Length: 326
Image (tube, one colour):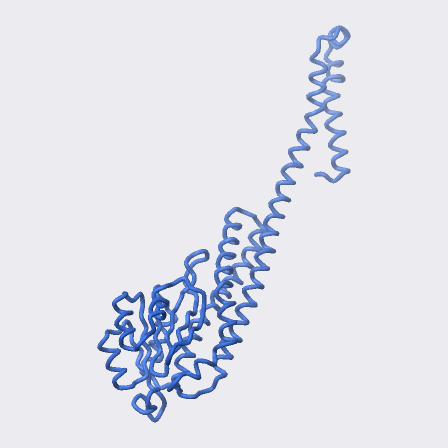
């Protein structure tokens, strides 16, 4: 904080939480040297240009703030840090646009968040801490980062339940819909893995640089270690669930293969049973002299005609039963 006095009270630091603030609102808080949080949801280029003029942002920061679909990163400029962090939206269905990218500008005078999609985690955080006493500027930054990274937990819990349901569903009835759900969950995990790993590494190496910013009130640095530990757990869960989904895929393919094998076995049995019948009926259908001259009574027809057909079917049925083919 700039002076340590204007925004502080006897029970802590009060941080105004602004939503898409105007140029005038930012200027007032800067003039009063009040630490504030400004949250921009889909700001226009004009908004970013005005913000850059007010807080003296580097042109590269403005360019990065406008560019989304970036990897998580932390870049240090004179007097502030620019960060790209990513959370998820627990309300998004599997296979949908799950990730929520947030750009943060952190200094000893303010913290600014920029995002293009609605993010309930930040909305709830603003309602909770708006002008409420908190420990310090660092704690405000920590709560924002924690709110973003904690969104992975409910999504992973839902994926865990979905995997259990899928395994039971595949065993009961391996349908194409089950395979589609497996691939949707895999896409979600791949998307999370792509952002969780670089964020974990970023907090492992550079998180303490936040505490070293000019005019940033000293506070407990264990906050950022907690973020790092949380991201390690998320990374481990993502890897574990990817393995479980690979196992579910193998289970689906195995179940389908077994079902096709059963169908092929039944068709083979039917074809094999009809093979001697076809042979015998074809054989006796020939106009051989002996056959035409001797098989001319009902008893002879039943013995040589129908009898041989029944005997061949019975023999094959006994053979298949002994082989345990059905």
